[in-house]
Image 1: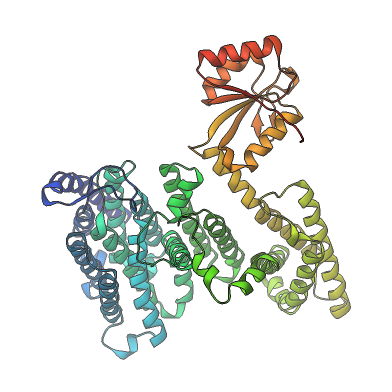
Image 2: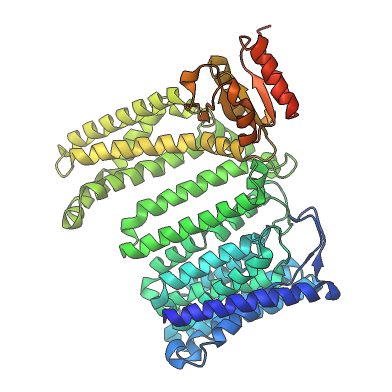
Length: 598
């Protein structure tokens, strides 16, 4: 079977590359060219409707084995999946040529999804899912179609994410999907890999709505097959599918929520997607796309671990951790303006805005709810690490009974320690002591309370220790995440000037700290130089010390330095003259730090 899948993948990739060349050549003659627009992410006219090549390549790869009924089985079992994808492809072609309204596309996707669900269930009443699941399945199909459509907002993004999702679905769920659907997904993956030859940055061909709707429909239809092949295991495959499709789901939910809060129409396009906000942080377009590729791989990896663990419960901490990371990423990216400083204007004008403001900023509700989840997950994980097999089954009732006590004690301890009065963006060593104090107090209160209630019968001292360690790590990681993301964004920003600081003493360290804290400066410290040879080859505040005055020219060329800043008044005389001489030859400005209190 693997040999046939490799053949299918190769054929689809080759047909996609060749088909992309044909579409690219003939698209301008038919007017299928996308001009630069404010709500698009390209700067020159680009041919579109590359989805024709994707569709043709996917079908070509599938037809390579369609004559083998022993491999693909009866058409009645798999035909609804490609037919639904082809139907959405037609909708996409009409949209590319006639500009359908968003309502028309939504109605089309739901109608096609309804017939897909009917075909998967069959005409017999015994094959149908409960009515609630049926409605969810129809909405799911339409939602994933439009999620991939919305994700097609940057070169190579939708194609790459679709490629990752198709491969993970085919690899993780062959027993639920059936061999024919696995072949279809493999063929789609090959077609997307071939299309990336034309669509990677800078794109020479766009897929258009016909491509994104076809990809979304095929992924959505395939993801529904397990619900009918294994209805008793509906929950587990559903979790797998959500993890595999985490990027389009997250991007769509993020955009819809923030557009609603900004008082904008959900159907109105714009450069406000996750990829766009990553670029606004300072990442290049390619880096933003790669970050979302990585996120897709992380989701697929979690799905693989979930399948490997043979159950949802053992992997609950991992799934919860991924959920926390997605929430943190969403909160961080939401802080980046995308609507001319009117990102939350609808929320501010609502009648309950004062209550929400008080709840969010005085009670720090988001932090409390995040800690609520962290406390529960870490306590559960401590039990899983401490006990195995039959022992775990024996001790889990004690976990369940004591969980409310532990959550209450630890939340009270976090509040009493003053942790909710500290800023995440400036989290440092002083805040670390507050975390240690809070976690220690919470663990002590929990142990004392459980000793009073249960005399610690059914509990383990090692589990309490593991719980404290895990919770401390989790709280530090979440609090430091905003600062870490700020540092990463500043270091990768294409708009920031790359600065070499001469002088790695206290003033130099203060200067570096301020550069990182003050985004308006648009400065990225890339290296230190210092006259003290003992500091050479050391890292100070995460910035390397690359020698003395003799290494100035080499360091500037190596790090692509835009300017040099002298951090101390002691840097003068011949040293300053030499610095200015070298910088003059390289046409780089030299500035000096002045500090004063007025």
